[in-house]
Length: 180
Figure (cartoon, helix red, strand yellow):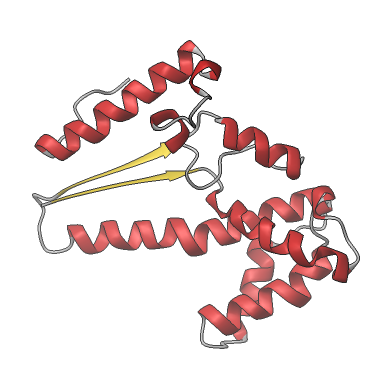
């Protein structure tokens, strides 16, 4: 039995869209970042309540791990990292561990996607402090939007071909084969 998973860097950017919807009520502009006091007073308590059964002792640990006093931009990146860890990386690692438990012959593949797509550019326009890939950034290389095919560079096409080879080889044989 095999397991195949993939993740983009800082996939938790999806949280920024939710915060963008309420930013005017909270007197800050998310395109400039997230104030540390907003993180401590609004995000941490909600995360602890909704995902950690209201274990308030965790608030201090989350604050220590993901808080930044450097700048709102740095704090925004830390919030993205928190959501990436909570909703993407931790479940991925847990799935890999569960899959591997009790059987040394099982194979797992996990890829980390770094090339920037049109999605990355759009997110950077909305959130200038964000320079990574969001959830699904790899899909653009596999399935360009209709009419956007001409915008793909040679490098984009090579990346798309590599991803198709990885995915189809895995589906056919359980192996990824090529390492570039």
